Amino acid sequence: MPLKTLKKADAETLTLEWILHVKNYKLTLSRKLCVGCEICSLVCPKEAIKLVNQPKTVDGKAQKAKVDITLEKCNFCGICDILCPYGAVKVTLNGEHVLNVVEKESFPTIIRDIQVDAAKCPVDCVECEKACPLKIIKVTWQTPDGKVLEDLSGVSYREGLKVNVNVDKERCPCCRVCEFKCPEGLLRVRKAFYGVIRIHPEKCPEGCRDCLDVCPITGALYLSEADGKVHVNEVFCVYCGACKVVCPVDGALELKRTKIMHTPVRSGAWNKALERLASPLEMTKELKAKSSLKALDSVERRFIRRPS
Image (cartoon, rainbow, N blue to C red):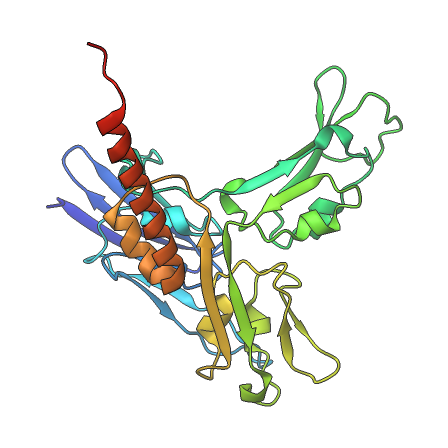
């Protein structure tokens, strides 16, 4: 049992701690990075994480849900850290970002596949940086003598400058906005979460824009001039569920996750998380695939010759 437990909360951060004899577990949730999506609350094996809907602003706009974590239930496993699409949660052990479920290979990590051919980027182009809805892309330039420039204002020369495109992958939900905005086609992003999202306008309350108000990805939801309702552009949707959390009408917004890109793993803990996170069909497919691999391994072990 911990010698001491702490829970601190303010407008910017929620912090939980277990202080033991030689170990100090800490969970930190950044309110700034958190978008109020449902993923951490769905996958928490201890049901320690809850979403609390917030009142609307004075001008009538919906606010993102607020995450709360029950200290008595949390065991600092780090699953919420691993699966947060926005990198809002960090779990540390003695100050180091060490996650036991990953170290023990009982849980996968999410694959954020972002490829940039920066060597071909025009020197003056910063379109990806401007387009990123989360402001996690930074374009810098390196001079022939190794100096890094963060701004070309006042720089009279361009020859010899090397372009660097830096993406904060831990915070990137892989929405692909940068890919589509890159005029040179030098960015390639594969989504981490795939799914299906549907809005049924006939069920939406008149004038309701709650889902649009909280969506963190520019262009994933948009207001149609034709009918005045919110519609979906699934090209940019990351299926985080922030919109679903605040939707005031059951059935007006449907969201299903059909595929999650992750490192290989065979684990009951992952199976349980997947059951909560993805559609039953996706879970069936993944479990069948694991079953086939297990059978193949068994056959190989039986028939591969061992040295005599």
